[in-house]
Every structure is written in structure tokens, then in C-alpha cells.
Length: 561
Image (cartoon, one colour):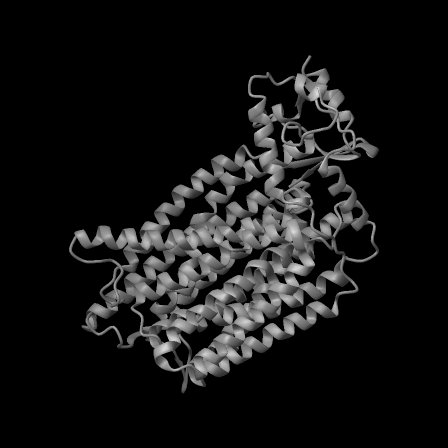
């Protein structure tokens, strides 16, 4: 008779749980360790945003690329840099462990920043473009290991065994993102000004120094960290569930007493069985071949934990897809918003502000919003909802998606006014002329983008950490980053499609002459697509099941949301 598989100590995930359990018993970790990693991330984000924030200016002004080409190159580089972490996460979880991956990738990062500095200062012009992009994508390689592991490694310093540490971890994600914003905003205020008014070499040299500081800070906290070795390939464990389920597709999923008895035989802490994707439950059923075998074949027989982990991954995919349009909207902050500002009056007295400097208002908004959210909104909301985080993670992400729609509406209105002033002053065919309109008109759209970041990005970081299986959390961070990567590639696709469709009407909406472009129409289209995406998100979020852990020693079921 068919039955559910009872673990006998042969399954790989039991070893993983023992590894994790022993790590949690360590006296290391907590805020005293996490604070080091937060400062490491601040220094790294200082380097990254000092480069990415003004990259379109370097490409258009120094390498003389057309605006649409430069925008696509920026999006492509950010996209690649956000997708490669999937490879870095795989290497960390399977072979090197998070600590070693961070160390190796930080060294590569420092080498890439050094090469960028040499390129903009000493490489001859005819070779500069080639070397610049070589260094740029070497930097992507460094980011591939650094980004998925640093946040996960920091969050690992907090245990999930106590309610106090779970609450501290939820607060950690707010302060983690605040640290990112402080680092990035400092770069926008200081480095971008130096790049525009002193030299590109001096600006890139400062960014290189910041990354060296990040590496030193990381090594200084080495005695305080909770560390764990590689936990095995997450892709292998996922594949095993699908293969085992397919091999037993002829079997019917058993319910009732068999399942109850099976769940009672699981380790002390286990994922609770769910009824979604029930086809996968066949992977943990014993057929005649399993019963007659002396050893357990992991490609035929899987544990409840392993099956439920795969279900968690499948549940996250629709949420991941709904976050892509949010990333599309955020891509404009470093591309079209910057080029809009380049045409407007940017002087304060005798000081000329860099065209990318308004990105500081994204950071300032987040710096103000996150402490208010963490210290004011969450305690008040907690009294009404009874939820430890005030609102659920998906509610927080949904709020960010809704606010991002508003940013596109405001951007379209401001661009309509700018183009009207351009027409009134006969500047349509003079794209390098300064439009008699203050750059401060762009501040609202930057601030609304910052507010949407504070809700959506922080929520995504927490979701793809908490809802991932413990052995796959580096991969979870990579999936969060891939939202940005795929979103920026999607932005490229939308730009290309809009150019192709609008050209059939006689005039492209996005051209090298920003005054002849129709960014107001383009922003309106993005707002419409984002609104449709938001409706889909709400529908999917209503049916989402959060991860639930059953702690047998206290006979308690814990929902992590």
C-alpha cells in the first residue's frame, strides 16, 4: 500500500538543519555583528551609486553616446549586475559559503573600481570605451557574489528561535535599507559633484577608496559573525522534488491519517504541510520500488520539508513577476529623470548643481520615511492589526507599487509643463539650451519614488528572505535582486517597443533630442501599465500563503509574514 515517506536520518536536509541549529546556538551574532555588515554595505553602496547615479552623464558627455543608446547601456549593465547574483548565490550556497563568497567578490570589486579609475584617467581615448565597459562588467562580477550574500549574511546574525530576535530581524531590514540609502545619498551629494566639477578620475578614485574601506570593515568584524559553511546545491534539491513527483505521477496523493502520522515523524521544527501544488506531494510517497530498496534514493523519495520548500519557491514566482513593473519605474530615476534635469536651470547662486544631483531627494525621503515607519507607524499599526510588523510584508510591497504609479503620473504632468515652456521659447530644436524652468519642479517625482522605495524595496528584501527555505536564502536575495535586473531589461524592451510603434506615427516619443521627445506620453503609458500590474498583484496577494513552521516541542504553529 502506498504511504508517505518517513525520514530515517538518510536525507540531506536533516544534516542541513543540524548545521543551522548548531550555528544558532553560537554566542556570536546579533546587532553587534550585524552593525559591522551594515557599515560594509553603506561603503559598498557609496561606491555603486557614485558610479551608477552619474553613468549616463559619462556615457553621453565623455563617450558621446546618444541618449537612447546610453539609457539602454545603463539599463543593460544594471540588469546584468542584478541577474548575475543568482550565479553568486548558487556558488555561495553550494561551494564557498556566504562569508568566503563575500570576501572573494569584494576583492574582485576593488580590482574593478581600480581599473575604472585608471581607465578614465590614463587610457588613450581610442581604447577608453572598450576598457571602460570591460571594467564595468568586471564590477558586475564582483557584485554577483557580494549582493546576494551580504544582506543574507547580516540577517543570519538573528535567530528565528525567539520572538524577540524575529522582531529584531524585521526591524533590521528597515535599518539595513536606511544604511544603503545613506551610503548612496552621500555619493550623490559628494562624488557626483566632484565628477562634474573636478574630474572623473578624482570621483572614481574616491569610489575605489570607499570599496577598500568596505573590505577592511568586513574583516574587522570577523570574530563576531555567525558563520556557516556551504549547505549544498539548492537547485539539486528542487530538481529532486520534481523528478520524484514525475516518477510517481501514476499514484494518487494520500490524505488523512497517513499524512498526520508522517508529519508527526518529522524533525522537531518543520514546515507545515499545505494543500497547494498537491502534485508535488507524490515526491514523498513510498511506492513498491521504494519499499523494496535498502537505501533511500533522493531522486525518488523526498521529505516533507523538501517538498514544502519547493512549494514556497513556486508561490513566490507570481509575486516576483508583479514587482517587475516597479523596477521599470525605478529605472527612470537614473536615466530619463537625469536627462530632464540637464535641460533645466540648476544653479544656486553661483553654484551649478550636477544634473544627477536630484537623486539625493530619493535618499532623503527614505532617510526620513524609514525611521518614521519603524518607530511611529509600526507600533500604531500593531495595536490595530496585532501583527508584529504592523502590516504584512505583501501589504507593504503593495503600498509601494501603488505609490510608484503616482510617481509616473506626477512625472508626466511635470514633463508636459516643461515641453510647453520649450515650445513657448522656440527651443524644440535646441536640446542643449537651458529651459527657463527651475529643476526643483522634478523634486516631487524623485520624492515619491523614494517613498515607494521605502515600502516596496524593503518589503521585497524581507519577503525573499523570510519566505525562502533557510538553505536557499542567498538564492532568495538573488531573486530579489533579479527583480531589478529583469525590470531594467524590461525597461529596455519597452523603450524599444515604444520607439518602434511611435515612429510609425511619424515622430518617435524617445529621441536624442529630449525636447522633441514625448516623455510625457511615455510616462503616461508606464503609469497605465503599472496600474494594471497593481490590480494583478492585489489578486495574487490575496491568495498567497505565508510560510508556516511547526515547533513540535511547544506544539505551536508559527506563520512568518
